[in-house]
Image (cartoon, rainbow, N blue to C red; front, side):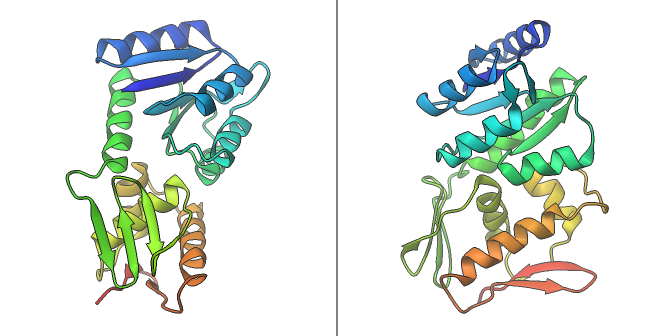
Length: 223
């Protein structure tokens, strides 16, 4: 993979670069928010590893700006911030995963592999459910042939729902399978993303595909 590492700590940046290159990746680096954001928007990367505490800005703004610029490259946050609300904030703005420092290099590679697996088709090109169609290769979603814009997290959630249609899926399962994280009962980010996805679907159809199963989870209904 071609990877961009945005990290101001030279020791961490050097370590991550060495680990990634040892695993066969091509790595570019930036040590500040301005250069990192510019590289992310103007170049084609397979993944971005982003620190939050940068000398000239906040990694949150970098992530938000590249998503606002329609850059869909997967973003893995690498940060010393361990508070749950910070993690939820980053997931909401479009990050694909969050790994706290200090970190194990094996876990870093595992997280990256999981992100790559989620964003690739695995040989399947399209999934259909009534008027809903998803192109996994192009990461496009249409309803009655009308394009619907989704964030990375919304798209990954939709794909998991469509691949597991007509069965009850718990919040714990969604946290693990869609985001590869442990579900925290004190947060509502899964409900938030489901609300976002449901709203975008209902803007194009009267069918409510996502059913809330009280005290159990959710089911994506498709005949």
